[in-house]
Length: 303
Image: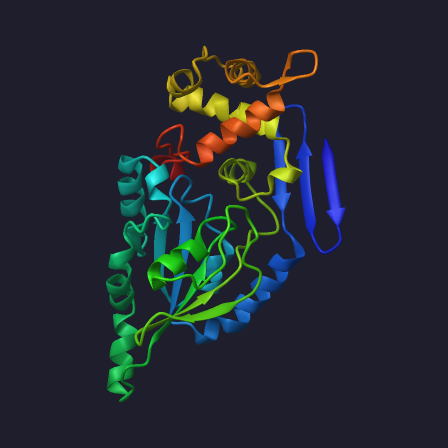
């Protein structure tokens, strides 16, 4: 299947016999990237949210160039959905690379209280420079960045203690920039979630599709869910058997059929509705109903 569309949005979703090929780069992302470049000179700190299940694959590689010479803070968001031991390993991984790092669960407020202190610590050199120049009480200006559906707006609302930013469980909710004054010490610039024009490693696109950062409407969800079943069978053996009362195997499509059978997903003629089963299974994974699952690990990054 090949899907191409060029209007205000640009996307490609190409599925071949063995591999799924991903790209989703709507027109508003180009505009958002330009806006971020124009505003970076106003910024003291770049707060980058990543998904704790895929901390490297959910990092936009353009952010390192954009945030060059700025203080950096990485938030492992949705940490409640990832394995705790992996969260700790990823924190060490990023700390060794010179980043400030905090585990957060923006929906439930986990880790949020520590953020203000971490911001002040990350920007202490800037604050000291201001003090020496006689500039007192100038707020730290932070740009909040991340891929679509990583939870930026939910994080901002949790940090502010009120609804300041529009939220949703689909990618592409935030469309423009928004300045938010948290208190006398911190101002935040909320930005739209952006991907990058080309995934050099298609496994990155696959993981982004798993967590819902690429629109399901342009994906073959059965192929996607089958591949996720195979990954879970390999790395988290027994988790699908326990959840759906099925027999696990190396065949993702066979497991998807078993899930359809177990959950009574049927179409006319009493055939198994694997498309419905795929959506059900992906939704269970994305919302943590399969348990705490991490899709990539620090020891793989330097292999």
